[in-house]
Image 1 (cartoon, helix red, strand yellow):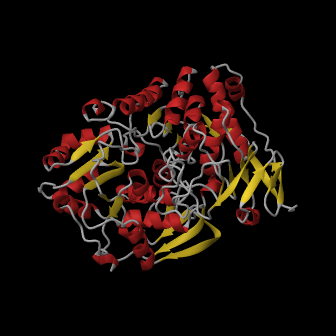
Image 2: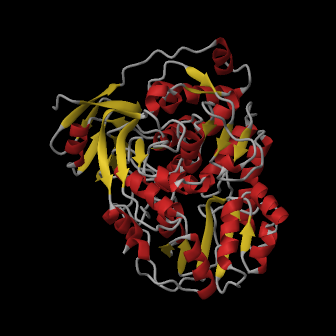
Image 3: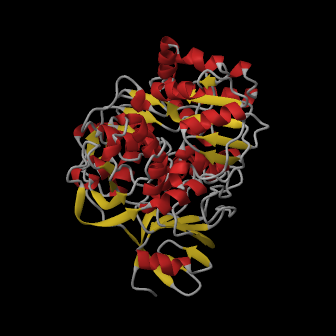
Length: 560
């Protein structure tokens, strides 16, 4: 028997073969919800199935939507038998918690020390009983985490007791469970929410939303809705299968009935009314969370799907994580040597590399202030960072509002050099010279990004499918200033409501073999989500490929 013990996060018994990785995994875009196979082309577990396995990794990373994928796997009997983490983890854990609380198909989740993680990862098979883990060569006691008293207000107690109906009571129960898991001592008010679980990537999202709607759930703070899976007003004329389109619309309708605003954008920070410095909000959608914390200085942890609705329904969130001053400090510093003459592709590359260098902690990025980044540059940086890191924010010295003094004393200093940019570029460029589709708008394109594409096309017609996804507000602005006409006259298709992480055939052209994008986020997730090879480059690169149908695979001049 080892002297170390495992902490019980979600109760349950299970057994299965060990599937372990030293790298975190995003279940959204990283695990197929139908087959349970790892589809992240950049992950060491690619091709492995998580179904029935004791899945071990330090923590998850990437999208808040992982909780929905996990719930869908559980509902279909393809979830892991158990999960074991060596660090705090909320997204996949919430999926397991909801599976147990609402649908009686949960499974155990445990947390262990780094040393114990390494020992357990060497076992071929683990059996998890009520109070012990049994491996090939060891036995480990399971204990409850030290209980932190959770002080609830009279209002919290009233909601929990059912005053506002069963949906609000269940929401408060889930929030309290998560709060205790996170070690929060109390809850905090939030001023607005953003719902991420509105993409019909799997039936679980619809099942959850309609169940909460039937139970009478109503949001009590202004709450926006993420991009969905269809162009809500036009999908019937776009060849979208009726079953899929109607289910996706039902999912959106359920959230609207619960009082959410039909914004349908994954970039809520582009809306006119955006969060202010130090404002406590509750957002899901990883890129939006990172942007809100980092660029706007608002405060929101990376809330998992489903918890976002629970918080919006109660107006209360666990007072933990980056709601707290001390949790917003940088634990490492990235000294970045920026290549001279870089294009706008540098920003998603910096974000992607920063996430790889800082997969589980908030970094301070140094060396970028002389570039005078625009908000759209920071948008691209934050989105790519969210694909490779679990951290909910970053700081950019001389640029973001909390960067001054953000680094903790003794923070590790990590160099980012030319070779890191070359390696990242090659990781995101595995496709051929010939491309069939240009993908712009992951996250949703801003007006300025649409203008940049229009300028890069320089009046020329495109020769291959080129699609921009954008929020309704941005599309209205683009129509008002003439950008929409320039792009559509060139042959570009501009689609509202859905985004590249939710697009499906036939909107995604079925005959596509290779995709070109200026998004580090989509270049990372694209191979798994679309099954196509990806090319990555600047806005000008995308425009050139849209016109010619090809782009050389060589490194750009500024990386040679």
